[in-house]
Structures are given as C-alpha cells and as structure tokens.
Image (cartoon, rainbow, N blue to C red; front, top):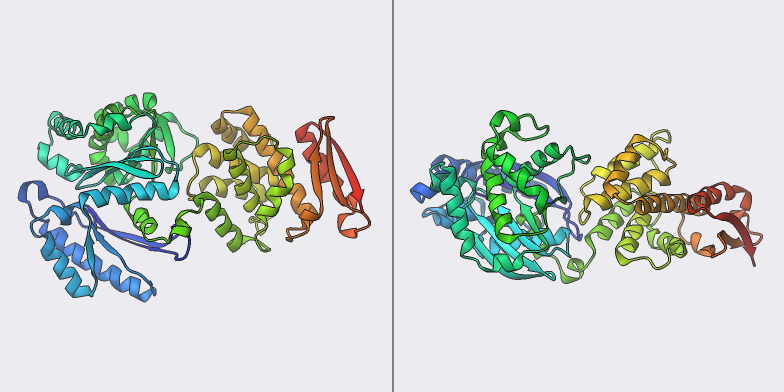
Length: 482
C-alpha cells in the first residue's frame, strides 16, 4: 500500500527469481493532502479498503501460500494510519506490516540487489510519500535515509513552487554527509515516476532498445537530459511513446529530484531499475541458499526447464565449448554459460522465423541481472545459433549496443558453436561429452568423435563445423578416436 497506489503481485514460489504470475494495481491516492492535513485522503482510504478486500480475496482464490501486506509512507506518517490498519486487519483477517522509513529504503535496495547482486552505489526510491536512500557496497547496506519528500508530499510542501521544492530537497540531502562519500559508481533510480522518466530519456537519445530495466546513462549525459525534462512543457512530454499520460504532470518534478540527487552524490552513471520494494520483500523472505544463486543463471535454468526439449544440459554445452575461449574473464564466461543454458529453448518456433523470434524474445524478456549490452549480446547469440542472416539490420542495431567488434565476433562464435553442439547431440544430454573440441596455435579447429559410432558420422557434422571454423578463421578437421 503506497501513497499513490495499492498493488497485488503474486509470485511463483520456490525460485530465486521473482516471476510475477499476477500483477494488478488500484490508484487510491492515500497520501494526497497528507502534508497539509496530517491525515489520509478520505476518498483514497475508502478506495484502499475496497482494493485490499478484493486483492485478499483474489489471493485466497488463487491458493497463495503466504500473503504479506506492506504499508509504506502514507500509512506510516498519517495520524489515522493506525485506524486504517486496524480496519484492514479486522475486515480481511490479515496482518498489515507498516514499514519504517529505514525498512522501506532497505526493501527497495534489496529489490535492486535481487536483480544485480554486485550493485555498488546509492539506491534511491522515489514514491508518492517518501524519498528513500541506501548506500550499498559489497552487497551490504552502509547508510540509510528516508525523507517525507515523495512527489505528492513535495508538491504540497512546496505549494507547487519549483524553487521551494529544490530548496527542500537540497536541505534534506545536505543533512546526510555520507551521500558525497557514497558517490563514484552509480545511483540506482527506483519507482514509477523515474521509470517513466527513463522512457523520456530513451526517446531523447533515440535509444535503440526500449527495455527500462538497467537502462544506464552516464552522469555527464544525464544532467542535460534531466534539466530538459524539468523544464519541459506537457505537450512535449506527451509525444513520447508508451509513456503513461497520468505520469506527465509529475515528470518535471521527478526529473528535478533526480538531478539534485545526482549533484549531491556525483556518481559516474545513473541506472534505472524496475525492481524495488516488492522484489525486495520477495528477496528478504528467501532461504539463504536461494539468495546466493546468480539471478541471471537461475532465470536461464528456469526457462530451459520450462521450454527445453530435454533435461537442462547447458552446463555440458558450456564446458564442451570452453577450449575455444582461453583466458576468458569471469563476466564473459558467465554470459557464455547463460547462452548455453538457453541455446535450445526456441525449438518450437516456426523454422522460417525461428532466428528472428528468438532474437526479439531474448532482447525483450524481463531477465534479472542483465545490462543492455549483455542483453543485446545474448539476443545475437541465439540469432546466430538459429542461423540468422549475419548482415540483417537487427544485427547491426544490436551490435551497436555492444560497442566492441571483438564482442560482436564473440556472439557469432558462440552462436555457431551452439549450432554445432545441438547438431552433434540432437539436444539430448550426455552425448556431447563424448566428443571434444579444440583449437590449436596452427589454426586448426579439431572435433574429435568416437570411432565407428554411427551417431557421429562425420558427413553429417562437417557443414556445421565448417561454419564455426569460418567464424574463427580456422581450418576444420574431424578426427576419430577409439
């Protein structure tokens, strides 16, 4: 229950990654007028009671095993917040957990860490009622702050005066000296208003990928973008595609708030995250063994299990092609492992469109733990794995996100290796490990297969091996061994 909306999200249980099975919100504006009256919006309170009643009934009809009801800034700060909590608990036989400002901030940070465990910098969650900040370093929380300066409260406290709103924010940020020490790496922008702001920034940059999560801009580029939005007329903002028109009136204030935060923290970059308090609560309740899993690899294994033809064999494929990548950095090895896990999940697409469908789905699916460069790389890998045209316009656009010819060539190598691997094995586990792949200093690419086994008849393998060899600028050789 936020200051502006009440939302129900039902997640799949027993998994590291929060897969939403159902997601619905009701706009209630509980926090409207709170800054002046000290009380919840009466109309919003009635709407919230109705929404919670419906959502609890839905959750029970769906067989939800654990229902957690969280309330944030509006309920926390209002004089009559405890009365609303009592009504909700009595009417629905539930327990409502009212998060403190510190806990709300930490839940938002846990949401970011759920997706990006290596996140370093300041997680900032801007809602209707509060602005919550957490300094994250090494997966731990260093410092926390929460201000009653969400968009609704800031508008009311400043009387709509832009200079007053800036002054209120600056004064609040100045009371937290750790913010300047936390600068350097990133500000992670969380919350619906900042997600909408990301859409505007993408439009201004003519950005080629319309995926909000992990959209990143350097602080140098962010400052003029935020300054433009802060001064933009509504008619200019309304031109942005897929931008919620309900967000437009608050966007200039949201841009100003992020701009002041960037000036206070002085990060290298601004990262927009679609994950926040809800995902943080999900992460908070996970067993430690699940929390330690890599979110990207967990996502890929789940997809492979649900969509693959055979039991997951991605580990086998990744190990088999490893000799092609000597002295491989850990981050690139992780991405190759991810590609190996999902190298066969698009088998049921129409053959004429399989490469295109695989490419677009990989580019747009809501994976956790993927920046846009890695997302583009994985999309290119599956495109090449299914024999897509290497000169197609979609390839050119995706390779532009990589900004590295060597990285682009690498996607072609992995794609061709996956194509060969699945030709060799038919996708069945345990087959590929009976062969070896090696590239030597003389420029030969050697595939060694068991002698006399009809499963590995060279005539049926040579074409795929030759394709991989061309990408590597090597000479293909098939060797049989007892």
